[in-house]
Every structure is written in C-alpha cells, then in structure tokens.
Image (tube, rainbow, N blue to C red; front, side, top):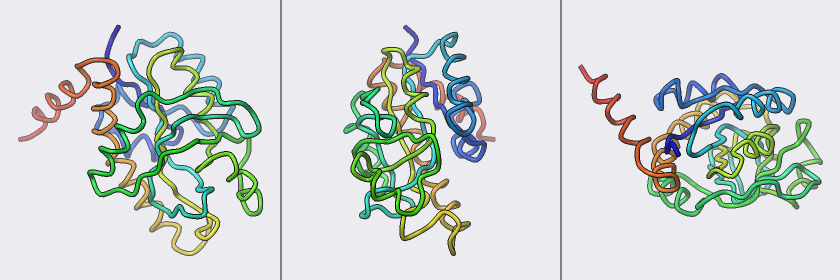
Length: 208
C-alpha cells in the first residue's frame, strides 16, 4: 500500500495555504455537501495511504477562539451517528501544540447548511466545530487512516462577517499552513515512510 498522504481542502484559499505540500498531494474538493459527494466518488479511483481533511470551520464550543486548531477525534453529520474515527489524533495534536498552536481534540460536525446565531448553541452539544464537508470526505478513506484538522475562523463572539474578519481569515490561514508538515509526519507514522521524505527532497531542490 502506498504511504502517501492526500489532503482534501474544500476551498481554494485552503488549498493555497497547503500548496507547499505539493499539487499532487492537495485536492480542492469544493464547498458544501454536493461538491463533497462528487469529490468523494472520484477518490475511489485514487491511490493514497492516508487521508486528511483540512480547512477552516465555525467554532461551536464557547471556549474556542478564532485561530484555534481542532483535531477531530471523530466526525459525524449533525443529528446523525459517527461515521469516521480519526487514527492517532492525539499524536498529531501533540505535534501541533509543539508549534505553539492552541489545539483542541474533539468531535467535528458536518452540517448541510451554515450554522449561525442561536443554532451554534444547539450544535455545540455534539461537537467542537462545524463545517459542511468533513463527514462526506473522511468516509472516502474507505478503511485507510484518516484525520480531520480544522482551524476555527468564526465563533459566536467573533462572527463570520463581523469586525476584524479579514484579519481573522489571514491568521487562520497561517495556522492552517502550519499544519502541513505535522500532517505529513502523521501520515508517515500511520501509513509508513515516504511522504515526508518526498517533500523534504522537493523543498531542497527549490532552494537556490
């Protein structure tokens, strides 16, 4: 089995944040459930050893703030049963904390619509963060190791379109970029050697 990591990022800005991992390793899957279902079907024909879903998300737990990183222990559709459990999320969280990031471990919810306002409090009973893609994409791992990493963009106190939104977006994307090499090391640990060495080799060739 190949040990290589495939990272699914729904949005273009998320894919750009992780482009240092290589174009063959980062797949932009599209926003929302409809695009995720299509991309998940296409993943059936791809070879990879481990799958990560990475991007931004809305914070549900009142302790979260914009820029926090959530490593999903499991992922489920809001109102449904758990579909996928992450492989060794604690090890990934430990490495991310070593970079000075505020990291949380817990469930990730996937909703069919944006969760705003009072709906956040209801959703918080089931997860730390909410997005619109992870549950569908993580299921496409089909038994291979998978993990979900989401950086909090907005919270109840820091709304998506509130004051300071551009600054929060920039900070969240920087933190998303920082998850790249830890994700490769996670893949190396759960699916075998190869992914990290390939990136190191490519980056060394890029140095003038």
